[in-house]
Length: 483
Image (cartoon, rainbow, N blue to C red; front, side):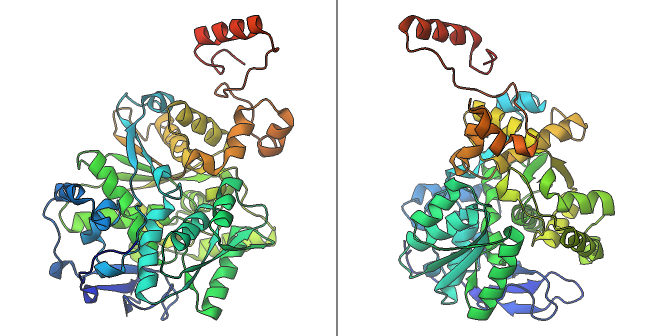
């Protein structure tokens, strides 16, 4: 949908290389996805001294009363004073960001937290069913600013779904091109890309291979790149933290726990808190926990075993290159049931190191078993999520067991995607089909668990059915009855 016309001063925003030895700057209307001078990542930077910024965060609440304005309805653009890179009339929105921060006492009990102290930020309520819409609205806005028409991404699923939604649900002439790896996308996500009309190109390889190719193609053909290496994507994803603070009455939690894949969210969250602290809108920052799947543990490996840190913007990246070379030499690919974070070469690694440094962050890895068990506990509390989302809850549980998180801490776990993004994993975990279980989960080392809520098979007989209902009514659920 289009929005009313009022100009924003785009000269007050620019792009800047994150490398302190370079710090080259570029206009906000340039289409670049790496620093042309040194090749490093770019930030979107603002001249805050010349921009109107609210004196208190709770001033944003007033915008909901004028939500017939599409920008104030959006859970991204009603915070536009904190991402002021775009003229108002250029904004591309489909009503993203109407998300939920929910107390989750069943999950808190599972994690080991005091009741009321664990919250779940549910990004599955976005139009495409994942957090990606927060970034896509910002990236599509920038694409419109620079006159782009063809847009592309590599994807494990959620990015492609969001990309396809923004192309098909708006009338600005965008054409979607999606690169996926062979067998590396959940059907729930692939269905979205196909249904929304995207050109879908499946290559032999994994996400890292697809990412390599899409960057080459975008560069060769002048196609606008929508992956999170695009700094405007991360500007939109900052707003997840603004909504978390809003849901907490503008009080800063003790912990933010987030799955780590391409590391766009953790990087965006760190940038959000750096800016909020600089502007005096918060007086402290939460600690950040980034949770890798064990089968895609690049960040955890480099931080834990090679002590890779931000080092004032000059991290020793030789360790990461050595690790990547080793993966290539051994033909090792990322492998986890949490397909959304099945990534070995996270493009935002350096920005994530910055976030970890600023937020006194920690990194952990969790197994597929821990992910699926946590996912079942989340589902039993009423918010279904995809496997990757549950990595945040599994990670919080691990940090609680280690004593890093205290039971009285206020913890927010980010649930990045809807349950129906990957129904295959859910049905395999809970279902009675042993062959399907072995194919989907058993082959990954996941075992049956007490959290499985398996269907109960009974004869087609009224008395048997009534007896079964009575049995499970007393037990509380099929899982509790030991089915």
